[in-house]
Image 1 (cartoon, one colour):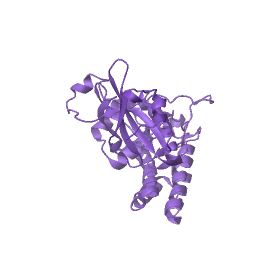
Image 2 (cartoon, helix red, strand yellow):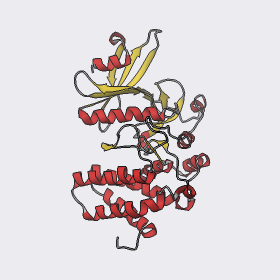
Image 3 (tube, helix red, strand yellow):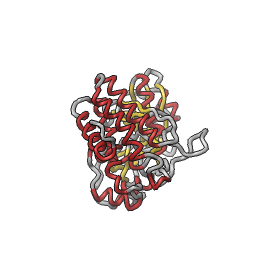
Image 4 (tube, helix red, strand yellow):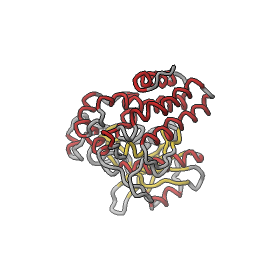
Amino acid sequence: MKLDAAILRSLSLDPARTSIASHGGSGFTTTAKITTTLNDGTEKYFFLKTGQGKDAENMFAGEHASLNALHTIPSLCPQSFAHGKMDNGGAFLVTDFLDMSSIRSSSDDMEKGSGMTLAQKLAKLHTTPAPIPQGYEKRMFGFSVPTCCGDTKQENDFTESWAEFYANHRLFAILKKSERTNGKDASLRSLVEKTVKEVVPRLIGDEHLNHGKGITPVVVHGDLWSGNKGRGRLGGKGAVEDVVFDPSVVYAHGEYELGIMRMFGGFGGSFLKEYHSICPKTDPVEEYEDRVSLYELYHHLNHHAIFGGGYKSGAMSIMRDLHRKYGSKSEI
């Protein structure tokens, strides 16, 4: 493999002291490990993603911003250093190299690092208010750039209302993509529209949550299924940490994170117990499970839009169950 000159420039690397080798794999990109020798003789490692077309540019811009938003907790994820266009065509993203090979099961390594479990890190993230976006005077729901969940481009226009953001930029947006990829579906559209009209304001309306006080936007990973977490050495050396990667960040309700975590599993009861001991469930607590189901719905719809097949039935089932509890008495 040959390292594109634009990547070398972005990192101020000496090509004579830098090499590249294929490493790992990704469903949407080509991945590699960059090794460079610094002036003091030590080696530094980077992880490189490359792709073709405007979609890759958008994906990498979103991931760059997402990783650096999560990096407010430095041991949580790799840091992103650069992204942009390559001289020979295509786009690139360069981050910390994450060494996940030869990791011992012992907790000794983690104790030498942050000493925090993934549940603790995630809870800290979700109890820290998101920053006020540039040009605004208060915290908002959304994000500074579009992000990708799978290959779905997500528009994240800043919105004052969380219920409005979730309805428009997640549920309606993914319905439109599904109709583009799978064709019109009257039954699916009808249930999504009913969910937006009746269930969303009833369950996550600003005047409903926390006894009318609403919620504060926090940074969420946005695509935290079990395949996007692991244990490794950031930068390829040092202590072993519980980490996450491939984020799709948005400033959101913290419980939004739990939707995809539930959908694919990999986060057991002990994880959630530890997490909620630091980050309590939002009031009304008795509606917590249904809120998580509402957030899980988006990911069923997204997988249906991307892959088609049986994901529609999961989405329909969630919406019907929520309507029986929170919707009108009209036929569903």
